[in-house]
Figure 1 (cartoon, rainbow, N blue to C red):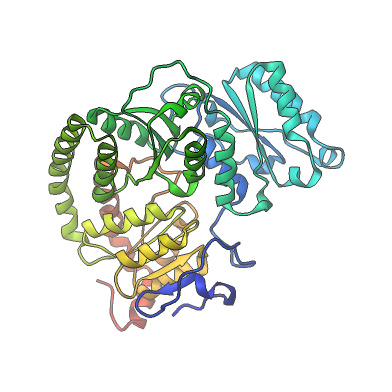
Figure 2 (tube, helix red, strand yellow; figure 1 turned 90 degrees about the horizontal axis):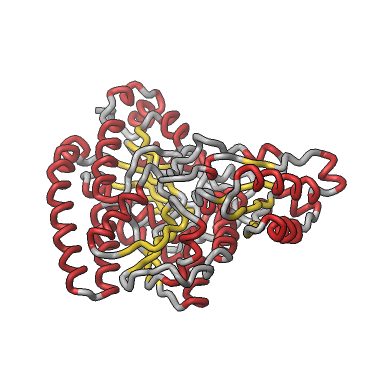
Length: 456
């Protein structure tokens, strides 16, 4: 078994060997080099896809390393979200305060770009020097005639999950503005879908074929005006539960909108997401359309998957992603390809999430919360994984371990959601896992020898 830091002993377990409940929701252990991001990162991940809003980072220029190509969130219109603006605080502002610079930046940017709203992200240094960001936003908002919202996302306040909550509080302030634009009685909001590689458009089309209107998507291909009427939808459908459940609860408390949790990854969860919405409305025509649509999509998908499965049967995978709901879907999707998940974990999972991961994985699977590169690489070699699914920070780990990699994070440019995304996923996994290059990896050769076997 891989050595785990003493403070993290209860954040890692092996199914069938360990009987304790996995600990989670803790601050990252000092020195562990956690793969988690900071509060500020969590907030910008959620809010940035609102394409007609201004996104201004109030802090040093280093926090603004978030530019055009680093995120796959697409827009069908304005692309103001693809630009990265910063107040670029220097030593002078750290000593004397940055409020004047923030006000000047807001005035200049709003005059130049004419956004529908603006978000000001507070970074660590703002929490230390005590700028009254709310007051500056209120003043500039009155003068410019738009809503300017301070996002209290100082990085030292907690983890990425706390950033999600700060983003939800900011986004909630945009709701409840439009009581006039017509909204269908079969209407939903999609929360926690970020239009990576155009996935929001794909999912919107699915619901449209069912006869369901998507009133607003928060925040993929998002628009300030759509968020303003989101309070009039009949149901909130939460795709990324880690990031947007807080907003769903706020909208339930304030507007009485119920919510369900779904996932759009893999055959089982995509299908369940459609049926859950259809069953919520209980309309016979919507139910019929949903059944016909699912039958046609799955029927055309399975033959293609079976071809990839021939080569992937019996292969092993490791999964480490931000949200636990995505981990559930990936375990199931890999099973459709004949692959076993031997390592699985997330950055933001809850106790009940890890209990469910225990249920859907096989004996011997390692389940971990907030892991780090040393642990993860050790688990990969110990379990003989052939594939790692993660984000940009996990990619170097996979390649150093000499195994295939599938990017399932915000930087990807390939749609992996929906039925079409499942086929893309299978193709990518197959292409990477079956590459002959991995048989020459020193790390894998050594690990195979230690297990008493050899690479195929």
